[in-house]
Image 1 (cartoon, rainbow, N blue to C red):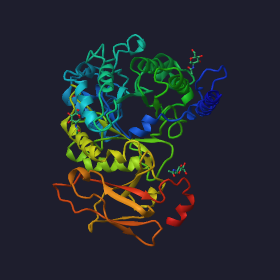
Image 2 (cartoon, rainbow, N blue to C red):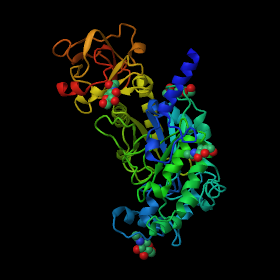
Image 3 (cartoon, helix red, strand yellow):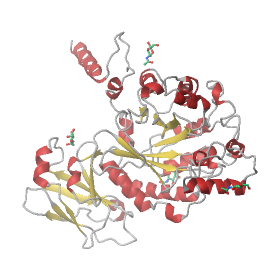
Image 4 (tube, helix red, strand yellow):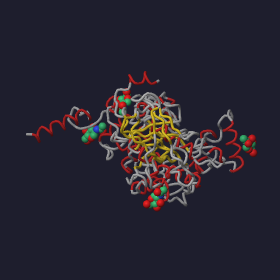
Length: 502
Ligand SMILES: *[C@@H]1O[C@H](CO)[C@@H](O)[C@H](O)[C@H]1NC(C)=O
Ligand SMILES: *[C@@H]1O[C@H](CO)[C@@H](O)[C@H](O)[C@H]1NC(C)=O
Ligand SMILES: *[C@@H]1O[C@H](CO)[C@@H](O)[C@H](O)[C@H]1NC(C)=O
Ligand SMILES: *[C@@H]1O[C@H](CO)[C@@H](O)[C@H](O)[C@H]1NC(C)=O
């Protein structure tokens, strides 16, 4: 009896979470309403940090970024209306023979030193939990063996031209068997895919028809998407290049319904929001809105901050100097704000055409990794705290531990008097405070002294930070206090509070 009842309530729970199709088949329909009703798989929210990789034929010139071809023009014929076009034309004039075509670069995309095991090791050390590679960027070049499933990718894929290797498959294999240093969970694998292509004649045909025909979608884009899911089981589909047309033209909703219902990664797969001009910033397991999206308050719809280690380019760019590379401090601060406001950070590196990673990328990732190895408890699996917004902008942020027991205060500037002021937590008799990373550095008591900032029983604390030297400071750039016994930790209803505190 009891058993039967349990099954019934389990079934009820299941129906509430997952809409059944009329035929009784568990699944999603090709509507935003149905797709948006799917709960976000936990792993993605818990992961917080992933690595993005932009690699393709554009990595050969490695000059002025991955939009090189578009700025140069199909045959170097882009109108010279901007500086980038001028510079790229001059660059091609200087480095190539007169009959040069962009497709010639593909032969020099050699990937000779491509070692996906090494990449996966670097990503694991960074503390990232997932890795997203460009399977195909806007230039249309497929980084996998697309020959069978997508005949229209003939002579424009990495198995027929250039590397003569399945770049996607090799990385998928290495990434999935690599454990994260911080969480001891295997890394997850995802794929970026561009819906549109700058110079594909099939796409131009549809565009000329005002997207009333779908020749390109049926012969190129959709066969590609189904192929990469079937071959590599990506648990993130990071779509892009959608903006010219509506999701109805792209058949995006049909694909996503299949991905979430019938693919081998139906349970764990997630997708972004770039599936048509109606979708961006509205529909998706997570929102990306625009590149480097970093709101200044909590967005309760899970989102992702996709940014690149350089301020200029996603693909490798030899023309950049040190000042274009963000510092580890900048990147760690971005990670903190991202996580505190309910986002994940997807940090991009651009490998060279020969498959090597510039050591500056490795260095930045390793620095983030060592910071996370001290502070990971406040990041992985954490949740945002609704009071976060009451603190002075970009100085103090909060996260809450998974079991709702610990409040973490993340601060990005060490106060000159070593007294940290917190406006939002309500301390109680049993409040205890310590700094992450200190227990292993020092043997004595690790509890920090604190006092009420104003009236007892109201929000606000002053915390005396420990006297640390460069030898025993647990990390650089940002520090984290773990607070237990906080009075207003588990509050669901903060609307009232909000008007009082601010
Ligand atoms: C490229 O070279 C051609 C021929 O040498 C010349 O006509 C053209 O002006 C050059 N273009 C640029 C942008 O330097
Ligand atoms: C990460 O794990 C690898 C293999 O276990 C180890 O060699 C390396 O030192 C670790 N790195 C960090 C930063 O913990
Ligand atoms: C999933 O597969 C079932 C059985 O083959 C089919 O009836 C259904 O239409 C498929 N659903 C989607 C969304 O592809
Ligand atoms: C924060 O606020 C949101 C929206 O008002 C609410 O759904 C959520 O439960 C709150 N979270 C906590 C921990 O109070």
